Image 1 (cartoon, rainbow, N blue to C red):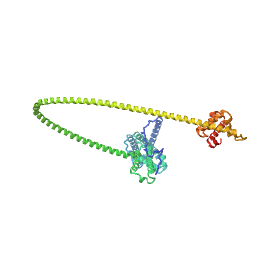
Image 2: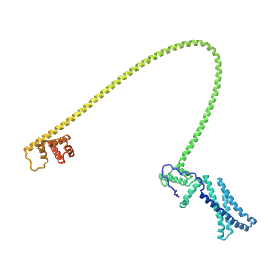
Image 3: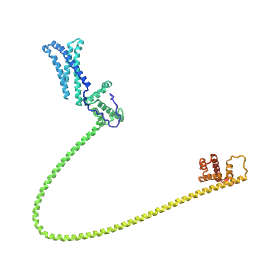
Amino acid sequence: MTTTPAGNEPNRPGGPLAPTAPGTPTLQPLTHTQKILTGIVVGAVLIIATLGFIGSYTAVTHLAQTKGFGQFAHAFPIAVDAGIIAFLALDLLLTWRRIAFPLLRYTAWTLTAATIAFNAVAAWPDPVGVSMHGVIPVLFVIAVEAARHAIGRIAEIVADKHLEGPNPSRWFLNPAGTFVLWRRQRLWQIRTWDEVLSLERERRIYIAQLRKEYGRRAWRRKASAEQMLVLSLAKDGMSIQEAIDRPKREAAKLAEAEAKRAAEARAKAEAEAEAKHQAELRQAEVEAKRRAEVAEAEAAEARARAEAEAAAEAARLEVEAKRVAETEAARLLVAETEAKLAEIARVQRQAEAEAELNRQRQQAEQARIQAEAARQAREQAAAEAEQRREQELRDRAQRIAAQVASASTSASGSVPKPAATSGSTSGSVSAIGGRGAKKQAEVEAVLARLVEANDPKAYPLSEVIADFGLSQTTAYDRLVTAQRLYEAAQDPKSEKSA
């Protein structure tokens, strides 16, 4: 059996589900239009009642005469209709006062059915006549029932006892499931239908969680007793969260009752202890009084003896006081001397500590100065080493340039220039030999950068163009010349052949 609750279902697995809390219905005053409609309805009902009473009176009187009522036949329909009106009015009054008595309503229904039957029998066996005689009493009864329903509903709403029911579409779509929910609402007096749907929705979500945890078919066997208790309580009109919290509330009640019993036992024990203490105090007072009397008697006897001993005691006390005063003076002198010695020792320790602190500060300052001097010496040595390395690189570059220049000069003087060459080697050598100091200086500068990097490819063409402001062709010629000079200087065979 399945039902589909209306509305959106909350999707919060593992969390508390709060039912929809319905608001308390309030009775709104009638508007002007509603008052006009109410007047029209009351007038129409009075017309129906009057005409129905007249028609019913005639038919029922004739039926009573045929049944041997005699002169009472004229009073019989009045008695029946008066009984209907009296019972319905009394039922409405008691319902309005919230002391409803259902027997009145059922009796009025019985009398109404009897009136309809009496009117129908008057035209029997003609079906048209039966219908015509029964239609006006039926209209009157429906009007009275509508009025009773309205007044009863108003009384129930004001008393917050009205129970909303499901809409007709739900009865049509799922009659069995709707009946189950409707029965649960009536059994447990759930006021609003939305709350019924919310409770059923919570119960279904809880069952879905159990199926997810224990399996679709085995969840009833595998679920714990506490979880099945939650479902049982949910069928009794309780929300899932209330059912889950119920064991905690019961435990809290038990703990509260236990605490109350413990408090009562503690209070009883305290009362008994207080009573025992009071008894002991009274006994102590009696004993103290007895001892006081004995002490008073003994004091009277000892007073004379004390007076006799008082003089000797006074002399002894005077001697003792003098001795104590001398002892106290000696103790104070010793204490003062010890305090002075302690102060001298403290001052001496403080001076020694300050001297030690100054010595440590001087050592730290000397260490800092030495470290600073060592750092400066290291920096100076590093600077000097860098300068020496740069000087060595410059000297090496100059030597290479000089060697290559001399080699080029000797080669150009001893070997005739070929008519057609590739141009790079002979061009670079002849450039150093005969194109002027500027070109030679540019080649030497590029060569110095290559020697410094110790890599013939460390100086790219773009930097040569940027550093010397040359065109790409001229810069390429200077770079290639310097690279070949560097490679010639690095090749021992070339130097020997040169």
